[in-house]
Amino acid sequence: MLEDRTTAASPTPWPAAYPKGYAVVDVETTGLARDDRIISAAVYRLDARGEVEDHWYTLVNPERDPGPVWIHGLTSEALEGAPLFPDIAEEFSARLADRVLVAHNAVFDWQMIAREYARARSEAPVRQRLCTIALSKELGLPLPNHKLQSLAAHFGVVQQRAHHALDDARVLAEAFRPSLRAAAEGGVRLPLHECRPLTEWTDRAVPRQQGGYGGQRPTSWRPSRKRPACPHPNPGRYEDGKRLKQGMRIAFSGDTSVERDLLEDRAVEAGLHVATSISRLTSLLVTNDPDSGTSKVVKARQFGTPMVDEAAFGQLLRDVEPAAER
Image 1: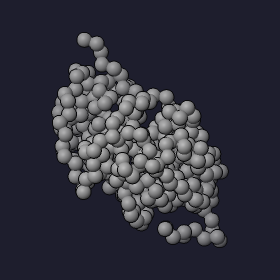
Image 2: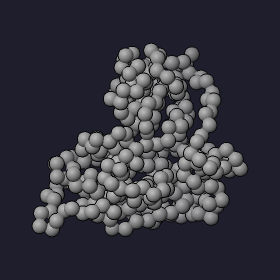
Image 3: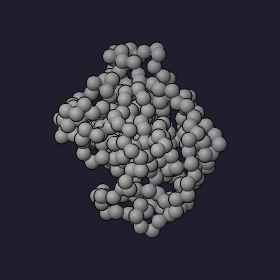
Image 4: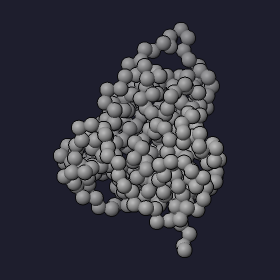
């Protein structure tokens, strides 16, 4: 745990406009698409100053293949006797109620949670969310990338089990507390965003598999996969403030908080063309560090290719414009 350097004699002046409590959340999922499911969830409840009040963790049976087991480590066998989401929805709600949801890449966690509640014919009691990636940018933290491990290392927090919901939530709670205090001391306005219930979900049946996704891999190595050709013509470059269009060529550069190939999967499912390199035909480059100097970033600047970060790309994926009929 981080040492509390705030003394009773000189407490940090606290902005009255700051929230009265937070729910630091992490969920592990079967993937990133609208029909993917939560397989584990953890919540650390914090008071107004970021001090831990309690924590909670549960497995969730997704009633389908668990997805990338080599990332989260949860096999079909491990999830077989776990409760279904409707069984834990009430307890989950009690942990979230009257608090700001805090997560690393909060758009993703919120969307997964909101869709699970929609499937259960209910709504999550969350009205605002705060993304710790956005907060680190507001604070100007000198991070090499936007991974949770980098944020944790900056504040001296030791991560024990990456991609385990309970440990990821613990790490984020410990890193969020000093971030919150730095914001209060610097008079920084917290990057709070409204949370609205989502309805765009599906229940496409995904069979449980003996191999492939469901098989446990001994390492994090993942073989390359051939993707089907994008069926839509390239409509050109992305324009700031407008929607992505099916057929656009999307490239990725640098570290992402969500596993790269899962992001690529979601882009393909949305009808986008995932490119492995930058050319004059590239519609958009997704990078969390536009000043990194990687070959893709350098070429994107040469060609004038638009760039957005991972969080913005996640928002754009919510509403991709269908391809024009030929």
